[in-house]
Picture 1 (cartoon, each protein chain N blue to C red):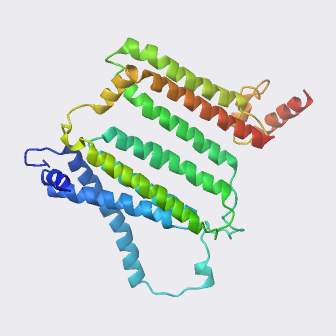
Picture 2: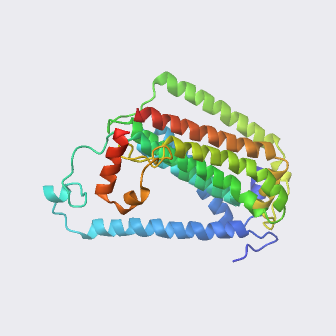
Picture 3: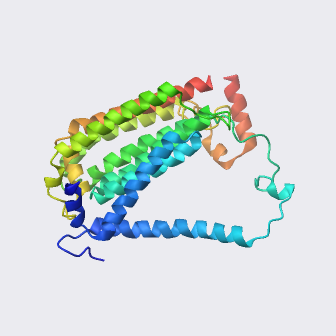
Length: 165
Length: 177
């Protein structure tokens, strides 16, 4: 699919393909919804109009204040997103200048690893804080294997031992 | 405008159509962000704005920037905004309506910025710059730049990310206690 003329537009050609693809995808969804709306019989009942939540009766409003942990996870995601954006160009020239890339990239990666280690150590990556910490601080004297096996008795014993200590 | 027309005449017609489609998507959804009163809808319109801008970057042969725009802004920052909304909004029928003076100030600042941009674009020599050939490996060029000319910003970015991570840990700890 050449651009023709005296200019070639590989990017624009690619973008055109992507746009047509997206347009078909979106159009297909809305066309089917439209056809469904035109064709189906309309016999509403209170059961049918209820919010579908995997067959469970809904409890309360979905407009509640969510936990701050979701926001923190999103923040972590963004941090490593930006890191990938910066490390990818670095990685493409690694083969060309291996020594320079290693020497100059090490501080960059080092600073980020320090931050990651701090997160891990401070236990902010733990999802459930009340029972057991996956941070290095909380693992002292804990048998992580028992946790991984979900052996409730072993875990309870450890929790008791920890609370006594 | 004649400059624009001259540029357009060099492009295949579907490229012109694509440009106006993405420009319209960007502008209309940006306008919708401003006039919408539901914060969740605003976030969705912002997603369309950022996607349209990515399309425009792509047409300018800045594929890496377009990809980063989609990954970091449309993917990351928008999720952060939506999670921020989930943290704050408690009322489903909360409507954000600007007061009269707020609209006035907003229109004034926006108008001045638009005038500044139009002057800057018409005064620049962007149209005389050679067009990209599409054969240069941009990512490698950026990588070389990061290791030479832009080394300090590259390393400072790591420090900035460290600051974000420490702040996130602080927030998480404050909640736990």
